[in-house]
Length: 188
Image (cartoon, rainbow, N blue to C red):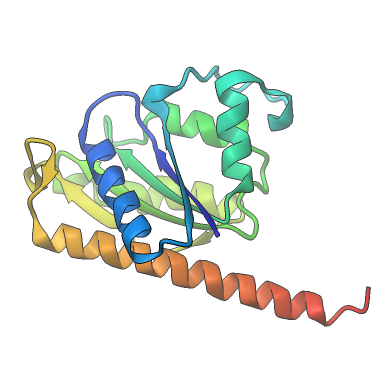
């Protein structure tokens, strides 16, 4: 199983801190899972121009191909101006419409205020559903007060991240089994 952690911002530290903890949890609880980090702050990605993702080279080619080859994606994003960062939306624009078909996508958000809670429901989940993702319904909402010196200090947040990791793996395994059973019905 291949899991990609997509850290969806090029600024700040909270999303990356939460992503690092999430991927560490995957590695500790599921050592057989191949885990890859894509931190958009480490790549230079052009704006989408509508071409096929396979035509991109360099960082954009690596990022899009890595996402397309994954079985599951954990998306971490901050909320800026009551919206997703453009860097994350651009990644979705680089990918084909059916990019997340047969993939599980889970998510967490880092936000400065509780008022940003519904951004995931109103903006990110509809995009992922449109792109055919199997969405882990519960996501982790992390506020600024849950961090101190680049460390998550809220035990409930830690518990919810660990549960998100477990749900991501279990759902990915369940959908893989369902697909295998469906494919076994055909004789060719």
